Length: 258
Image (cartoon, rainbow, N blue to C red; front, top):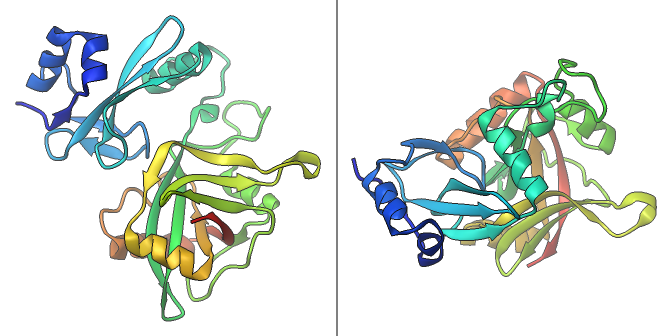
C-alpha cells in the first residue's frame, strides 16, 4: 500500500530515484515507526511521514519522522553519533553495554489547566529506563531520583503550580522549541539537558501562554508512564494518573527567548 511519505529532492538525490520510488510505493517503508525527532510512534499509512537521512563519515541511515516534527531532509552527524543511533535502533548493544544509556528523552508540549488558567507545559518521558552514569546493567530506573537530586519536586496532584527550578530554563526561539537548559558546571554557561534534533513547532496558544507568564511547567515521568496522547485532555488524564501513583516530578522553568 502506498505510504503518506515525503521524500525531499536532497534525500532523493542521495539515495537515488529507484530507492526513493520503492519507498513511496511502500516496498521498503515500515508502516509503523518511532519518530526520529519526538521519539513517539508514527504510522506512515495514517499520517504524513518525512524521510530523514542521517549521514556520517562512512555510514548513512534512513529514518522516519512525523511530518509535523521534521521536514524530509539530510542531517549530517558524526560517525560516532550515527553508530550509537544504529545500535539504539537495532538493539545491537555491545556485550557489557548498559542498554539504559541508549534511552532518549521524548518531549511533548501541551496546555495544562491549573488553578483556573491554561499553562504551557512540557512533558518528558524517556524511551527506556535511565541508569546512573557508571552504574552496572540492570540497576533499575533512576530517572526520577536523578531529577529529584537536581531539584525537581515529586508531585502527587496537579492542583497547584510547581516551584521554580532556578538555573534551568526552556529555550524558545523564532516561535520554536529548541532546548531545555540546565546550569553549567562550576557556575559556567548553561548547557542543554535536552535538545531537539530540529526545532519543534509549538501551537500559537502554547507560545502565547508561555510569553504571558514567561515560564513553562515541566513534568517528567519514567518510561511507559504517560505515552503518546493525541489530545491535551488525554494528556492531562495521563498526568493525573501518573501523579496519583507517585511517578511524577515537576518544576516551573523560566522562558528563555520568545
